[in-house]
Amino acid sequence: MVILFVSLLILMILCLNIEKNEYVAPAFIFCASFVFSCAWATVYAREWSLNLHFNTYWVVFGGVLEFTLVAYLTKLFLRKTNTRFRLSDYTVYKTVPIEINNFYSLMIIAIEVFTILFTLYEIRVATGISNIASALVYYNDITKFTEDSIVFHHAGLLYLFWDIVDAIGFWITYVLANTLIDKKFAKLPAAILVLSMLSSVFRGARTNALCKLICFFCAYIILLRRNAEIKRKAIKTRFIVMIVVAAVIFIIGFKQFGVLMGRTINQTGTDYVAMYCGSEIKNLDTFLQEDKKGIIDSFVDSQTFYVFLKWLKPKIGISGKTLAVLPQRYIKGITLGNVYTTFYQYIYDFGYAGLILLVALMAFLSQLSYEYAKSFREQWTVPISLVVYSYIFPSLVLSFFSNKFYERQFSTSFIKYCMIWYILNLLLVKIKIKFGFRGSAGGLNVKRL
Image (cartoon, rainbow, N blue to C red; front, top):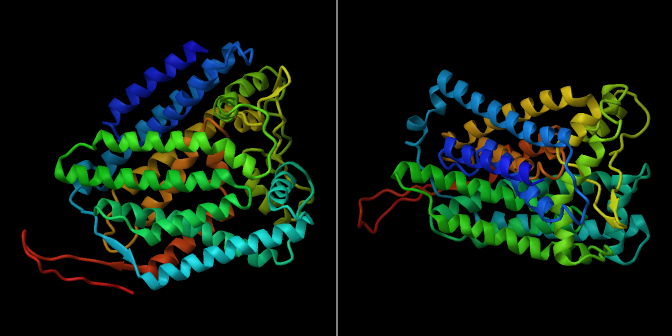
């Protein structure tokens, strides 16, 4: 286990140097994700009886190495074939301060509050459980791990509000990051983001809430780096420290979130976090020693694309549900959860060949999106390319955890979000452009309401 950790750590340092300290570059963050997980797994190796097998080492290290190489080659190809992606070209576009009209912000907040209350009401009625925390856990378990389903009285309307509030949450991260770059703290956009995260938590989706927070950090770092390049300044270390502090606070509160959701947790806080952050390596190692590689009969049984297939199968007349095959693992009577890193589904569906193909595709799409995100040229609106990469970014951060990339990007929800982001750009953004010489008190504000 130590050998894997050291190997990945060296690769991560190389990635950071190659990417010239671009902390949100796909290759670096994908590698850092597994370094983080392997650190926990190394500490708990004895307690979990984790004696890493040779094939597990090469799946993890080889998968991360392949992702790094494909991302780097994609970067070289794009910069060689298109001037848009060259550093000297995109740095001339400064970040323009963007605001949202207060009236529209308050309308969004009202929609979010209504959605939260509507969600709690529908879940209580549908489950027949009066205790909301227990109802949330029951709903979460039923929808994820059984063939049963929860029937809401106003399902279509409820799902529509979920999509709108989630899309707003991801979109507003750019607006909030933009105001911080302008050295201001916008209270209403911050409230919108927090309420969007709470909307996810109250329906049992802690990971979705975490993704919105990660999305904000991604947008902020890209804007910070963009302005730093314009001014030829380095990103200050204090911001990286701020990210680490935020991560520590989240980890400390992670168990408490689970308790609030009604989950019975018998582990200490550290053991609980270790299960979520490091047991994936142990679970993957166990799975790889079993004869369950490339066992699906057809694409419609795929685990990699099961979120998309849940929507597709009824549309093309295929009966039966596509379930997530994620058996719980235990060691010495202690649960290790049911997640196996992002590599599990690829190998489960298509064997080691599937791992090679799907990792390469993920790396190519991630790097392509990243190049568009940091070279955006829209100055008068929220750049959709940056919002899209900020949305992809949490999938890379959580690659050590599960198959977030294909679950989140290859889904109808992502398509709906993109449509909603475009509509939000048309309706809500106002641009503030300041003219004047240094020391001038005057200025001109141009607003699009």
